[in-house]
Length: 29
Image 1 (cartoon, rainbow, N blue to C red):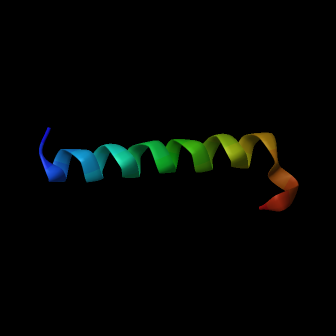
Image 2 (image 1 turned 30 degrees about the vertical axis):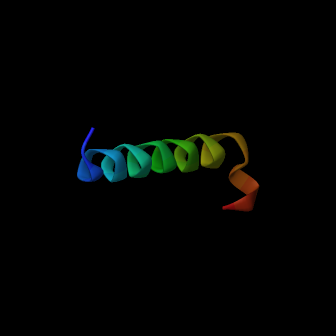
């Protein structure tokens, strides 16, 4: 895996976690 792919995957996971957190804890956003 290249560095660009690793960074892209990390960003995708981070965004997915933020979306799930916003759905589970809407009062914090």
